[in-house]
Length: 260
Image 1: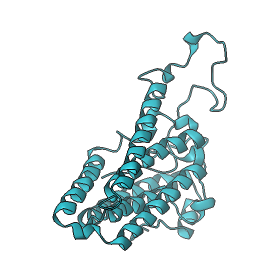
Image 2: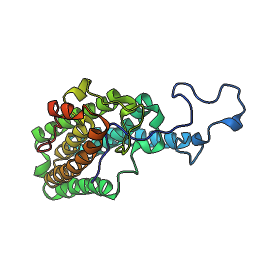
Image 3: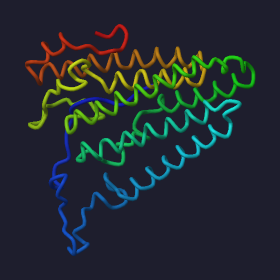
């Protein structure tokens, strides 16, 4: 099971300032940037269809959660939360890191098979246990704890992406760009990888919200292994990029158990 990333990566190069497009009103439409056309990395139709689809799924999930509020609203709420998460991945990127606002910034198809298997497994466990062990789904305090973790994790990740701005990427950078800066203010003053921190607790929170004991343990274990490896890999590059990284590392923490 994989997950989204944190500051640094290569950048696209040749389409002008993010606030000043390369075409003007009334300009010949043949000069409209090719990357905005269908199949382009920033295809407008791709952005619209993904954003619209996620909005529809989120609204449908919230409506279903209200409809089934007296039985098991957690499952459709999970679907809504998942759709909202993917929408926010793109929206925050588009708003604060515009040069990276490609269609794949929704991270719907870039996390690998394990990511999809994990969420399908979560929904299957939820359905099976609801029918065969419904008492597992009736612990209100567990659901409430999960919801709090989901909200807190989403806020932490969203703020991390906003604060890092153009230094944030969903991919680990293997070479330093001239514009790269080590972000050590805001939430980064306390957490070295707040986007990882946010996603880790968000994901576990979704499983507590669902009342899924098996997937709660599985998500915690697999995500710990993933982030443990990824953070070590990423910090090797960050230490090489920034002379001050060692001092920064000493005064900050990761926020994921047993990862230093």
